[in-house]
Every structure is written in C-alpha cells, then in structure tokens.
Length: 101
Image 1 (cartoon, one colour):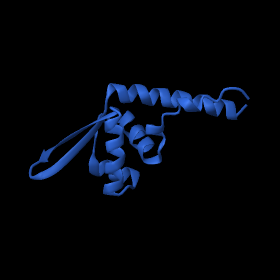
Image 2: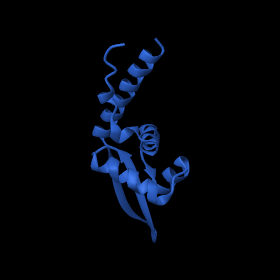
Image 3: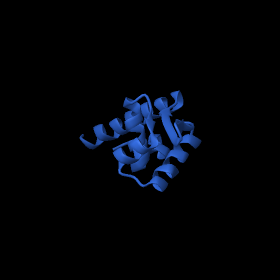
Image 4: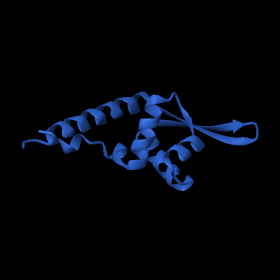
C-alpha cells in the first residue's frame, strides 16, 4: 500500500472531544458551553481546554457575554474551521477507502 497521507489528518481536530465539538458545530449555527458539555459528556475543565486549542488554531470563535446575570459562552465555527473540518473529513474518507481495499 502506498502513501497513507497521515500528515493530512489534522491533529488539532483528531482528538475525541475536539472532533465532537467540530461535528456538533458543523451542523449547528452555534452552541453554548453547557450544551456542548452535555452533548459531549465532558467536564467543564476538559471542555475548556479543548475549546481553547480549537480557538488558538482559529477553528472556532468563542463569545463570552451574559444572559441576564448569568455568564453565557457561545461557540461557533469560523470559515477557517469549516475548511479545516472539510479537509479532515476528506483525509479520513481516503484512509477508510484504503482500509476497505
């Protein structure tokens, strides 16, 4: 088998929680922190770390504000994040095609 192109698998996205964030946000306009925490069954600290990594890569935008007196954190994919996720899915699809022969 020639050229698996593993370098095309984006390590920023590939982690389980980060992949879950990207999948969820790809189909949602945006999500709030507690929604993501619940859907991904993640702890607050764990989710925060993964959101920060995606934000540093420019894949998501995090908006912090308030709803009444309660803090509200909303997250959405950026154009760069959507493009990176599309490339990731393409790379994974190519790997799966090679694995299935």
